[in-house]
Length: 178
Image (tube, rainbow, N blue to C red; front, top):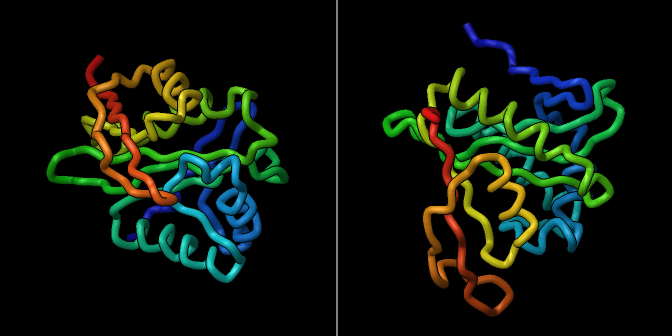
């Protein structure tokens, strides 16, 4: 029996399954220069964004990840998306990812949604370790993830190539045990 997709909520947020009707929101976020500046994925059309929508579905079907649409409680406003990919059942770990539309930056949504996502990972998925990979130049994200209790473990030097140059990526983690 297939379990229903987990709905996570706070007084300000509703984290629900990403639906095909969200494609315009996903495109708006993953084509915005401010969002994709430090993000590894970007799209130049709605058609191209279909690739991302299929990626979300494949994560769920293959049980290698789970991503939520982050919305207002009444589901009228789409703020962004967040979740896990690279779930390793064997090693009880996963990578966390997150992005918000720029209109909603600085309003505490990441600080509110991340604990829900992490809690689901630790309690429902049985994870022991959640990893976050952050472009070393993304100071806002690094500050935010540290406020959420993630520990900086090190820097992978020149491990990615983007827009004609090598990038450093910082590794953060949060463990289930405190």
